[in-house]
Image 1: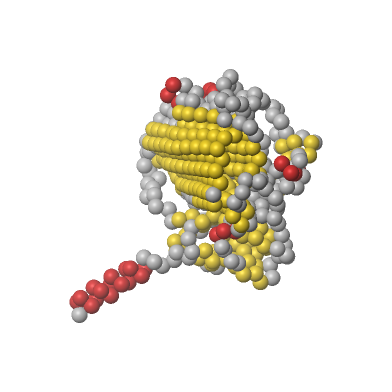
Image 2: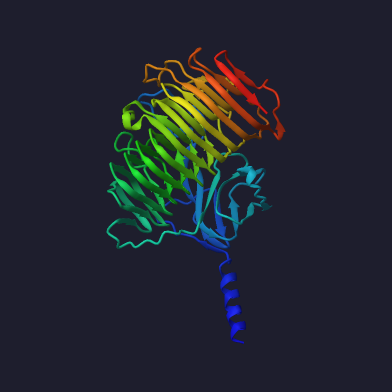
Length: 479
């Protein structure tokens, strides 16, 4: 009898461990609710926030210009924590004529009853609900249950609880943690310089909308930082580049959500003259580049002349103007190597989905793009200033180019691009696409390019007619 009771208790403990669980966080009273959607998770109301995003792919040439609000619109987002499965119920203000859940390869199958959408999720994920097109979309962030055990009284933890906080510039010291709890909105930026062993964690929102351009460093600015973890929070409305590890080593980014990146030069994550960086399980909707690996002249020295060991895995990258996945344009580094983008999803883009722009001296080599899904390009109203762009040059899946001397060039030397691998690249859209390779001259080549399993609308590309290249491109292999 005793053994039977023990077995029964173990069974209860095991089955309880697999029970579903959801955690929702109340929003501050000051937050404006979405005008477009209501959302419920397992019949519990989830607050739907607002974020300003780009409405049109229109840009200007810097300096001194900022995009007018008329080029933007209000989108929606909501977040919660999940273990197991949950049912999401979304009420749309508009009549539902068309509905897309992106990334489409997630295979989320909704049910629609009138203006109500029902979705079942079985794992933490990030996706977008588009009713009647991509405008005014709802972005849904289902987090894993928080694993960090936080003591607000710990003097090494800068704790921001539920509510609104006017923090301004938060300067981190070594061995410190910033924790932004669920239900918190912190207005400010976070910086760290010449420090080590830091964390930026939580479930709440960091918002830089009250920071003017050039008033403070980037939204999360790390300079000469070793061993940092950034995880869990939402970053909204940066004043310029959002997350910038510069001259850093051993940076880990996990489950970050970036939205409201509508301003000129509002990049998502720019890895600058750094090494040993991992970015995973992250969602970015950006006007400018989503994730870019860069070498900057001001950051180049003997200690930071090699950019290496960068891994980007399992990220969702919506791009409204720039590039979802990019190396460059600035490449002031002797060598840029051992870079991998894998299991990434591009719901929307405009110019080029995957891009290496070598604009300086960098020898870019040993780069892998694997298991990348690319969906519909945004092609409406595309201009620079008042000049419409040629739509035939838009919506490229891949471009590798060694640039000449132009606006962004800060170097006197040209570089090379060599040993680049593309494996299982899938483009699914009715819009035509092509691949573009451009070398600079006979000693600055695009060389040794391997393309395996490149699909357009499910059909494998087996010849090179869709690949444009000049005379300074050598050894392109397609299989």
